Length: 162
Image (cartoon, rainbow, N blue to C red; front, top):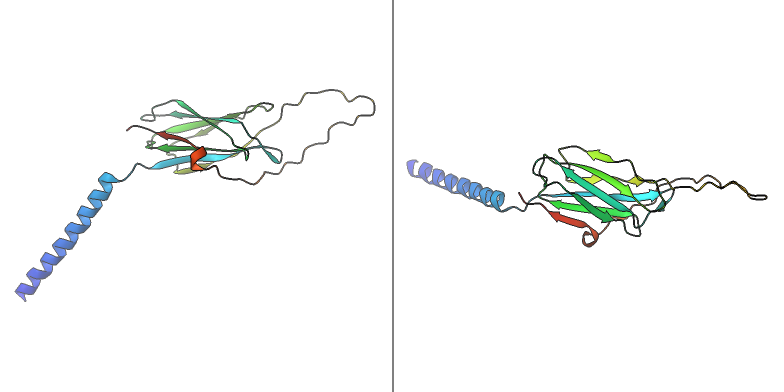
């Protein structure tokens, strides 16, 4: 029984060493996490292409700075950040020709791995009094268009240094 107990202890120690060693290798060689900010810009029931989405990073270790991504034909934007520290916070803003600028949206820490924010924009309307025989423009019925995710190739990709 004594030999069996020694053998069992040796097998247990070998299994435990394999598990701990495997975890240590994974922990020290894993790639940094990716944080994705994405969404769409729309007005009424239409996507707004070529809108400029600005993302400003704040907080310690965030390296500061403002990053930009232009919406595609579906009104989609996307930022992929690798190595974004948990202490970072972000502010998103949108501007587009012919529309009022969006209200800034502040995202405080901790930032989640995936953040989806849509921005409804209001058109800038030039007011003209209707002439004889002209009716005023009818109100626009708003329903959000379907979201089509931007591809990784279209995303603004940023790798932050630790």
